[in-house]
Length: 135
Image (tube, rainbow, N blue to C red):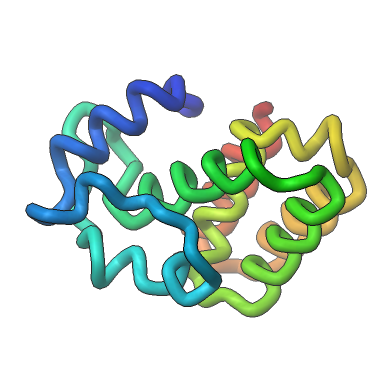
């Protein structure tokens, strides 16, 4: 299941995340995005192969951010998080693209992120880019 419904992702995250972190994500700032692995753990999500707690935490945080952020600001946030992020953070931005409908809202941004990931040679980023392309 490449794109589990957001409710399924949230349930699997709640069941798998470190104790006390199930109420995460609160997307207070970019530091919170970077801290997802430490705060929530990197364990695999129960019932969702290929997903980890930190991936889910970041995708859920971005989904919450999208609800309360103007479209142009969301694109700017995604650019910043991707280009300044480590491989885990970049993977989460790529995995969030189908949930945020970025391909429809800002196709140039989606294409640039996917192209960069495919050129990276990092197997996890390449897989996440392919995940994003399916949307």
